[in-house]
Amino acid sequence: MRAHEDTRDVTTRRAVRRRCARATWLGLAVVVAAGCAPTGVDVHGQLPPCPEVEKIPVEELAAHTTCSLEGWELRFPDGHRFEVGPANGSTSTTDEPGLEWGATDWGGDGTVAWRRTDEGFSFWGPRAAVDQEILLRSRDLD
Image (cartoon, rainbow, N blue to C red):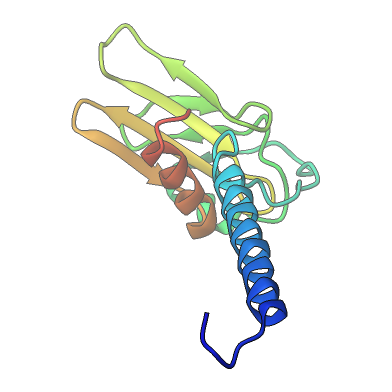
């Protein structure tokens, strides 16, 4: 303690430091807990069902962002056809090892179609939905 400081000032500063340290740790705990959400990705709202079910090439998915595509048939470039299931995704596998197709409904961000091969993933759909799917896949939580 310096000669000109009185004991009350030192005690007050120590108490403030302790409170700040606790607040910092609490804030860090909240940030860490938020980062530990099951996937760390969000579904932004739900879209109303589309009035009519259609069959479309996956290359056209980006243009369909105003309604849910559940029940729609997607046509992949390799000729495979896939029906979009309920929200939170659906998957189809084949007898061919390492080959898988699927679609994920990202609510207000739209629907993503994807194909996994031994070489990696291909994605089709609105940019925001594709970004969400890539984030999910990068966390390997699907």
